[in-house]
Image (cartoon, rainbow, N blue to C red; front, side, top):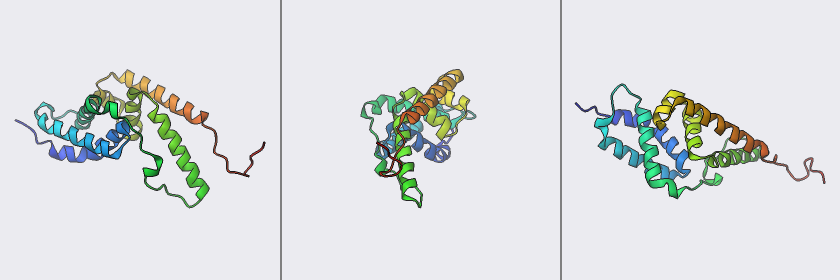
Length: 172
């Protein structure tokens, strides 16, 4: 007896899209990746076991599809394509955008294995166990990759020079 996974798939779409974007860093490529993952899931719906983590199963399909078809097509979404960040103060908005850009670059520079773990745990708020299942790796590996990813992002952000405005404390 086959289970209708369509309602589960619909509920998982926002997380799948966010995960796909973290892998592709392109809205269009992320949408294509999610569509491909949904097609594969629907075609293989009999292989999903009710009672197991559906989102983890979908993330694994999505990641495997990305590895198979999209890995060579990595691209970054320019900061200008991001939605406007909230803020009243122009300086605060600029600093926030620079911090976001530096964070995005630091995450993009991570090896794919670390980036996937970081996004699933820190952005998608998946548990270590669910992340391990989604990526088909041991929980200890999730923890070590996450620690290395966090350390690398923190180091990259601390290595980034603080933005300075002209005439605002700049000394020669």
